Length: 120
Ligand SMILES: [Zn+2]
Image (cartoon, rainbow, N blue to C red; front, side, top):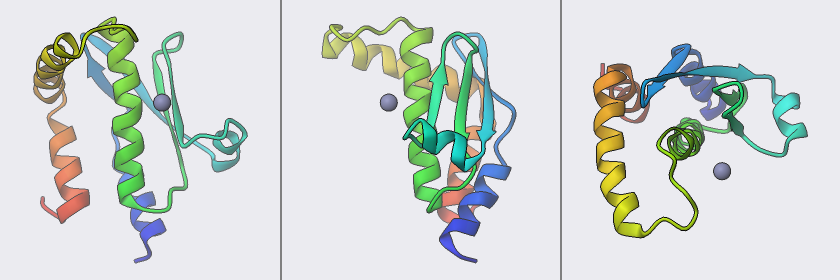
C-alpha cells in the first residue's frame, strides 16, 4: 500500500463528527480540487461547525497533522481562546479540553494509534 493509499484508508475511517465542548463538529471530506482552491489541506468553519479534510493526502501523518490542526482551530472557537491569551491560561485550558475530547470521542485515540502503529 502506498502512503497515499494508506492516507485515503485512514480518512475513510473517520466518523461524521467530533464533539468539542458540547458541540458536534461535522467532519467532512472534500475533493482535492475544492481544497486546493483554498490552498490548504482542510478548514474549520465556526458558521457551519464543520471541519473539512482534503480527500487526497500524501500520508497518514499529514492526515493526522491536518485533523489535529483543524481540531485546534475548533477548540479555539468552542472554548473562546483568543490570540492574546496568556500561555498558562491556554496550557491549563488545553488539559481540560483534551480530557473532554478524549472522554467524548473514544474513537479518536483508537484511530490515531491504529493509523500510526496498526493497533486495533
Ligand atoms: Zn490553521
